[in-house]
Image 1 (cartoon, rainbow, N blue to C red):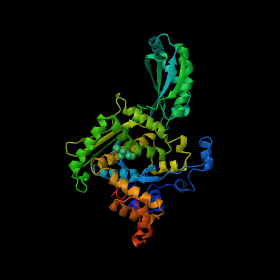
Image 2: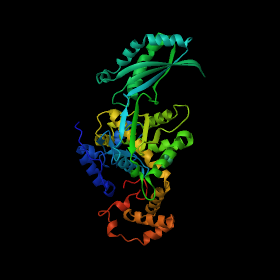
Image 3: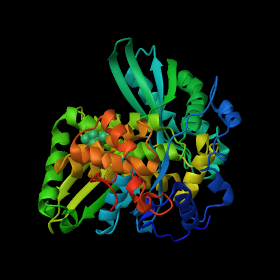
Image 4: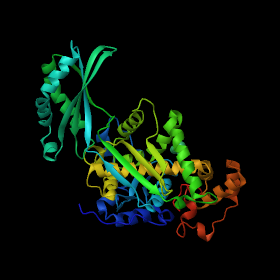
Length: 454
Ligand code: MEV
């Protein structure tokens, strides 16, 4: 695939209609007409495809598919597909990507795509002796694992190592856990590794004389990490009456809260996952696996804590970093079945699963910054109130053109009731600027949010 050099600064993107945005994004990323149609109601996942994906299918449930703009990751501009039902998330990511660009964008890296598969060994009289035997026969076991998937081997993946963990006092007696480290290349890898585990299990029993019980991958994929970092010049952080230093220090204090307190860390990390899950979902990946891995990783010290870190650089700028396990694939699973996921991958123009993980980590960091910036300054309710008001307006039957004006009036009056929305709707007359063909800005659901791309 040829990677086209694109400019992700689609200024004013939010002013366009969905159809115009889709065409512009497709043009920027040189999407094929087939990929483009995956993003339309007619071309998206069909009932027939859905019926092959899960059991007892009776229908489909749609979700908004948006694009975060302004992202620059490892010196490459990228349009980021995000599937999410929560307002302000796409706008927040875009706005923070715009700030991060002023410091050069995001830098991201990742480890080799090595997954961990676990084998539970029971009924062993001597754990140490069994461990010694497994290490002695390690190469034979790894060879056996490699015989399962010649394609993966050809692509440079396959078994990497065997690690043994001893649990002498488990509730069911002594237990040995064998970890198979398995490079799954561009797949999420659950199927490959589970197949490899099942193929080596009989040999492990033969070597140790023990009894193999479970054979399953671990979602704590801490050998498959993605990292992102950014640096924001302090002046860039100033807005309204807030000075840049004040915003920077407020963000660092807000992060410190999550660093020391698990109750806050859960919400802080949820904000990070708002961004990550949206990309994971858009690309047809397993977001439950990613969620499980992220939260388990956040508790790796024995105390659940923040996945990100924010600090002040010597030059006064704000710097942040994020590290988490990201088991993402660009082949297999729903990534190639769901036409919208195919389009998402085409938009991203990623060549490897690692690249996808790196971009996703950058989005998580941007999302975290958006939340901390809002929380550390005027709070998140300001943006949320206008969204809430808009939902009330829509609920009483206001057309899209009227909803924004009615909502801002209700917020100004601090009267967010259906009765007031109804009164305002009755007196509403469309003005030229509320004609959807003229201007979409007033209809942007998060126009008052501090997280909005400006
Ligand atoms: C809301 O979906 C996410 C936040 O609660 C994250 C945070 O508190 O950091 C705003």
